[in-house]
Image (cartoon, rainbow, N blue to C red; front, top):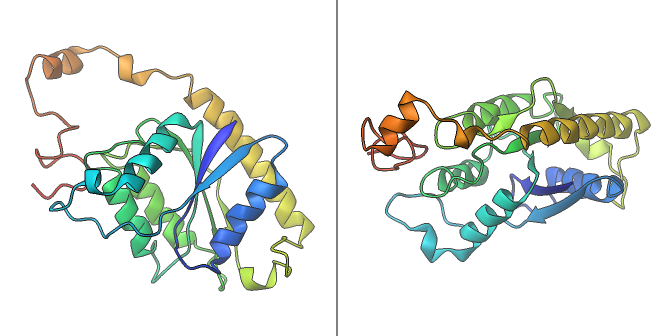
Length: 216
């Protein structure tokens, strides 16, 4: 199974970067994780175009081609970092790669909250119109006091933590297999037929005020 990994931080020594890199290395026997670089992407604005930033299209294409996505998010002021929020806005405006995509959320924190509130906010974002991802219920993975759990080589030293991460990742791969067999885009109904005929408003049109990161 091929997954795309996103670290919700551009800090070089991010604990969440360590967590995702460890996950990629440790469980490479049953899952392939490609970690994408989100640095250098400007803060989202409707006045800008994703076409001027090839990295956005590259990330979008990789997400679409993958079997699922793992997002490792820090927690800043009880929510996700601005760089991750901005990326989600870019990828819910004119680009919509998360539509129908299975997503697993993991997180690490210096304190005891373990990124719980950030993960909760991220779930709401992933579930919003214009994003429309699939998040497996009850599949949380959070590390508290993460600065004490990695050794100098970036390896998680606590056996129970490693085993639980493996457990959650295996569960997610099973979930992703099921989700990827769904073909919800092909569903026909009075609603889809009316949309195709030009009625209602198009929920995928960023200019009608209903899709993702649109203000209009």
